[in-house]
Image (tube, rainbow over all chains, first blue to last red; front, top):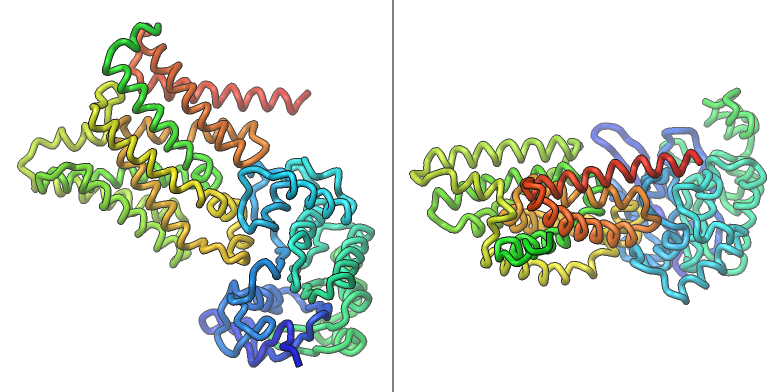
Length: 250
Length: 268
């Protein structure tokens, strides 16, 4: 049997005396779509940072396709961060940024072959009109999709996304999920995605990990994202759209 | 105006300043985008400690200032990586300590301290042939840094993405800052701290106003550096202005004009 795409065994992360994550144990089979949900401060971002090899676990072990995350070939891994750290004033065109996903470095100039690959990828996502635009001029939703284009252009086996739909309206969010699922169907890639949208997770994910510093539940969405568990973790089972409006959010 | 180019000291000034413009603007866009403008000035002042050590030991100051400043840059980078202190605080600490150490070295030395201060402030019109050879060697050596540009620019854009892509960001930080330290020491001997700091920041900041790509910003900064060197140097002579400040004021004027132009373009 082949190694799981992601395997966490008794994983823990601590900063000083504060436990950020405790005893995280789960295996994710290759080709699955895992949605990680949990309240703010649940350790979701820390967990994916350990999967990406950006943080070292304090205890336990994490493996990606049977090896340490830092040993996994970076060209087979894509990451879409939650916070876009780049400065708006950084002079970059969409095309150059997407090419950085192919080269794993910043391009001095984009060659013809790369240009056509970028055009193709942007077309798949319906944003070909953005190819020559400045990155700093994009709206939040456009930027998220450009990040997705950058993630997909290298044809990864594992895609890790930290709240990719943040800042998007409902229609754009649905479209992003469909594009992600389409890529997954076509490539058989594994997706690990953090989301606040448990309704979306029920709809799109094949596995849900409900996290609150430790695993509350992990499994099929109908099991791990069932109402009584959400009530336990979030204190309510209100619709996400409402929580975004600030009515019920913890 | 061009007849001044017949004078050997002017030829040396032009050649020296053009080489400084190239070196400074290789690093300038990286420094400006990483918000490290203070690092250039801080390292240049820290180099004073190394110059004074040379005076104390009766050695050529260049050969003591080079390792001293590279060590300071490594110290700054190490603390940046291993503490939560802001970069400007760390640079400020090293800068003050190295300057103080320099004064202590000069105090201990029986040599005339003016040598150290003249080294620190440089003079573009007093460039010697030997200085040009050293600068040329650094320019040629810096060609070896171009293959790193893609990784440096990538980490400048977003460190996290670069780390996920297994770019050795920390190692690159050490290499970048040590190379910058080395360049600063050589350039400040030629043109002084103030002019070098201007070359490092002003053309890159001006280029950022208009550039649409990071490579474009680098090329534009270099062209601006070359153009302001030639115009500033040639115009300073008939206008009876000191050459270094003339170049800086020209660069500053272009920067503000560029900002104003962009504001006008955005309004219309």
